[in-house]
Image (cartoon, rainbow, N blue to C red; front, side, top):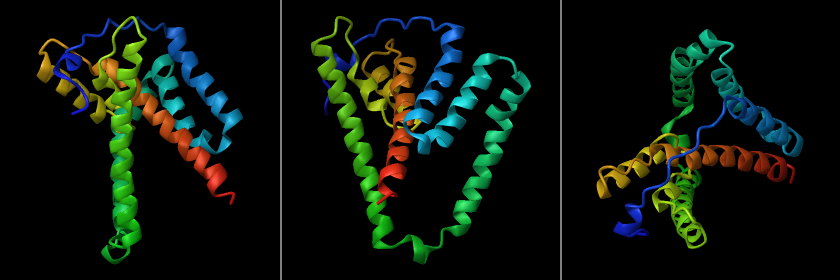
Length: 191
């Protein structure tokens, strides 16, 4: 509803190739900045950066492969089981919990709409046009938000592949969410 058919058909220019040095420096610099400016978010972003560093450095290939495949599945199962074991209906179905869920849905909607509108605003002053659909991927639902942006783009133009373009805002949404959580931990819990 926020984009026109013409906007959804915008083809973005091919992304530049990112060097191996940049791929290795990104998690290191990101973690250093977060650790200096917002130490409460460092453990969460540290794991994200550590995983990227393992994959991109190529030094610990076996370890990286294990973490990306088997270990992540095992951790996901145990996380789901442990959360599910604590999830009793009389504790979960309370007005406060349902209010939090409602706020989350509203936040995702606002984040998605704001991303689309920001991409449209950027098109007013940008030489290379940006497909507003990638703005909707700026929430931390990885990789589904990027896949949805790509799917909607393909429905308008079967040759318009937006997945790699949408992954940038998608990962930025993850980093932004972790930093926002760190800010909340630092300032809200300090009250």
